[in-house]
Image (cartoon, rainbow, N blue to C red):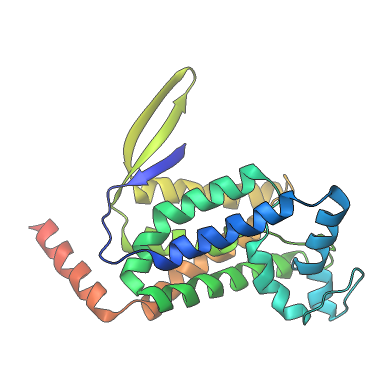
Amino acid sequence: MIPLKDDNPTTIPSYVTLGLIAINITVFLAELSLGARETRELFLTWGAIPYELIHGTDLPPYSPIPLPLTLFTSMFLHADFFHIGFNLLYLWIFGNNIESAMGHFRFLCFYLLCGIIASLAHIAVNASSSIPVVRASGAIAGVLGAYFLLYPRAKIHTLVFFFFLIRIIPLPAVVILGLWFMVQVFSSLAGGGGIAWHAHIGGFVAGFVLLRPFTPQEVWRVKKRGKRRYSL
């Protein structure tokens, strides 16, 4: 299943969401100009490496910034087109509504904090790994966790594959995002694919937990009134 768009209107322009998308695309285009060796060095320099962060030891090639800051820089690196394509698709579909609910500045802080927590979750489980973590998916998982809690009934137009049948079907966000989260959990238990599954889980849970403190109370009052109208 591939989500394509939602039926959830926003109330403010999505400046931060668009800005994050633009930054990620710009960095990825810069990556494409590098050779394989240079790209590897880029990831080792600016990616978040669990062993380095746990032991406080910078392995060559050395980073020009303090190691804890790689938790931030790693959020804007991607390994391939598939990686960045799906990440930014999810960010656009779900991020604009969370930005609309929180406001620009709160959303930016929320996004970055979820990304850092996601990286820490991965590092906690893979403390001895020297493989750099490069992805925005942990931060975006936080956005998904927030959307899951705030807009569970929102309809997501989803491309569904069933053998040779391909359909676009509107499905509730709680179904799409619930299935997404279960895939992350089961994949982490299977332990394969070279994907930071624990970062996805950590980011999603962080978004779920941090949504309320980052969201103005008025949003919750409107949501509560909407539930009452629905129940009648």
